[in-house]
Image (cartoon, rainbow, N blue to C red; front, top):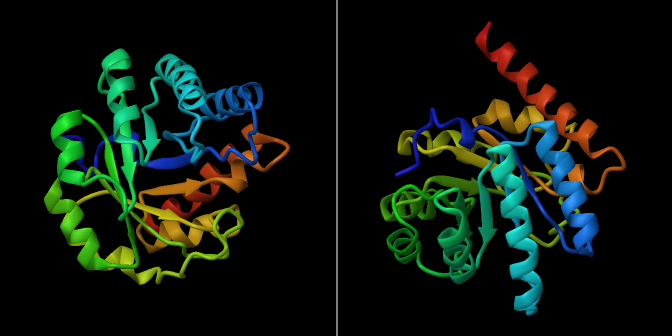
Length: 225
């Protein structure tokens, strides 16, 4: 099972697409290719539309891009789509589940032990423990800061990241992560920083990815002194 803290795919910048910021195939694929070239660790495809043909077309094209850059593609909340893509592209296809989506244990059984499967845990050590026991590869917490993508989301405490350290799984910080907040989230214990607007809402996507990575590296360097 892909869950170890030393897995390089589960450290760094985790870019999440947004259908409002990237409204068509051309903008989506162009922006994601730029982010991949700039060095993101994971890419999540998130589209809540009911257009199954569009979602298959876009996710399949993103899987091809991710394969070229050796970066896992994570599908948001759609186990059936992830399984279909996995049959075509292999174990590099993963899944992220919220608390109202398919059961994590079922996803693990259907996608196999090598797939990256993440779980939304909000601000809860209880949810994190349950997700770890069900086979999660990483645990996502937030929102930690004011979010442009989900402004209505309940706030979370940065301290929850240290509280779940004993579970031994990579921790993802999400919600308002940008160049000003990335260092705080990393210093609090997040191995990955999930970013939407501060990458795909920026005019210079590659520069945004590199700036976020620099902020994370600088925080890590300070912590090692």
